Image 1 (cartoon, helix red, strand yellow):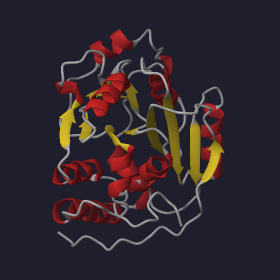
Image 2 (tube, one colour; image 1 turned 180 degrees about the vertical axis):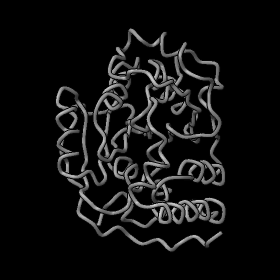
Image 3 (cartoon, one colour; image 1 turned 90 degrees about the vertical axis):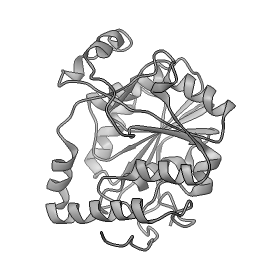
Amino acid sequence: MPNPPPFKPYRGPKVQISKQQKISKPKLSVVVPIRNRWGCRVVNCLRSVKLQTLGGVEVVFADFGSHANGHRGLMDLLKPYDCTVYYCPTKEVWSLSRARNMGIRRARAPIVVSLDVDMILERNTLHVINMVQKHKPQTLIVSRVRNLPDINLCKVRLPRDYPRLAKLAEPHRPGVGGLMSATRAWWHRVRGFDERMKAWGAEDDCVKKRARLDGLNIINLEKQGYKNVDIFHQWHVPAIPFHKKIIGDQRYDKYYELNLSIFRNDDSIRRNDRTWGCVP
């Protein structure tokens, strides 16, 4: 297992604001990392956030590295929706940590949720997260997700189809990922996700480990007994072959091993430096 690599600050282009949400004082921010993704999955994810019973939700898309046409496609898709989009054009290898940090760094609400773009939230999810975080601020909320089968995602109609999705979805899968929530103050104190991690793997487990070392309570949302808080994962081709095709098998395996090394061997709580979140 290789030693964790040293942290190297990002020196790429500055983050651009492509679209600004109109909400003035949000209660909760949802950060959605993205790169060259648009279509039904994005719409379903965003629609599920907009249908939440909790009002005052800020939605932040963090576009790290989409090519010009990809970013334009995303912006066309988001025209009807009130949300904020930050864009950092770069050819750097995909880093989920850096993309998430772009949004977390700029989120304005006291509670910040990191949400993957292929998720659909049931309608009470953010209300419960907001309630728990307000009463127990020293908490990291995670959730196991439920995989949906290979259905026509373009025909999903929310909120009508929530009961159908609940019947179709598999039981909660093991592990964490897809959604993480903590106070904005905590995300800033620890400087977000570890930006040494690239490609894919171990980002969520690393945050969970650091939160535990920092004395936070770890709460699994689906185990708390609340109704309508499931998170559905929209089917897509497996992520690992896709990433390997983009960056090559050997490079992918190298990054994955380095991610595991960081997770297993680094017990520090604060990561990155003051440039975290793509701030040169």
